[in-house]
Image (tube, rainbow, N blue to C red):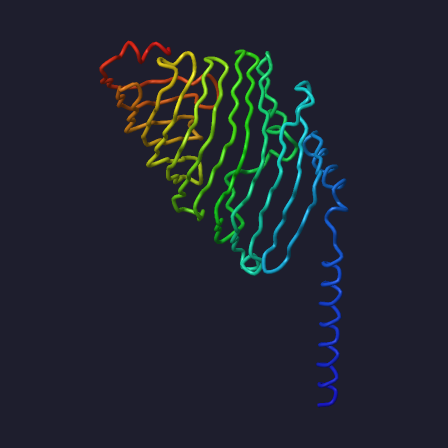
Amino acid sequence: MKLLIKLVIGFVIILVLSISVIAIALINFDPNNYKDTIAAKVKEQTGRSLIINGDINLTFYPWLGINVEGISLSNAANFGDTPFLETKTIKARAKLLPLLRKELEMDTLVLHGAKVNLARDAKGVNNWDDLLNSKNKKQNTNQNLPFAALILGGIDIKDANVRWRDMQQGVEYNITNTNIHTGELKLGEPIDITASSKIVASKPAISSSIQFKGTVSYEDNGDILVLKPMLLEAVVSGKEIPGGETSLKLSSEVKMNFDEDTAEINSLDLTAFDTQIKGQTKISSLLSGAPEFTAKISINGKDLPRLFKIA
């Protein structure tokens, strides 16, 4: 009995010491000391330079999380010195104990102050092509997720900006002040989305303030996305717009098939310039080339010539 008591006491002492050592290690662990290591790994895998100007903060319990400030990723070769990606804040965290049961329960994913510069040169090369062809791209995209359950508290994107320059076509689009918020994301369940943004185009020279809301669901392991219902409201202005400005309201149901590279727009209902357009549209070569459209529409309005002045 004395031997058993000694063994128990010894085990408790070892356990306490082990926990103490782990706790001290975690308390004294500073991820900021590994910025250069992280940057070197990114450089090895993508050929891009990663700079972390702010702090990296980690939490371990009850949430395993990371908060990174001030990230910058360099642009592709021959696309200038403007960073491909900049962010002010990225936050992500997951409950620790469910991870031990192979269940991923995440809090809201936060992305604030992101700037993305997308470009296509005169030869048709995109400044993200090299990322798609990076060393670790070759992997089975159809393999099952490693988690028995997946829950994401939502997505919170604030003040995001995207610049798109197409040097082949000589056009530029700037999408600014973008805010996107979603409800809770669960595998196999619909996702509610609200968004707002401002878009400025060079050809034609117009700008638009947009409000959007809809519900997204997916099929076939994410190869098919369905947006139903979808409502978009906008105020469009510019010299090309009759009267200089107009309000626009669009409702529809959208189905995108990434495997077949197609999209269907059904129950289309567009109102602008006191004109209503209804119908349906099918799009092929959605992402792989020049999109091709087939449509059946009906147009009703008092002043149709005014509507087509912007064409």
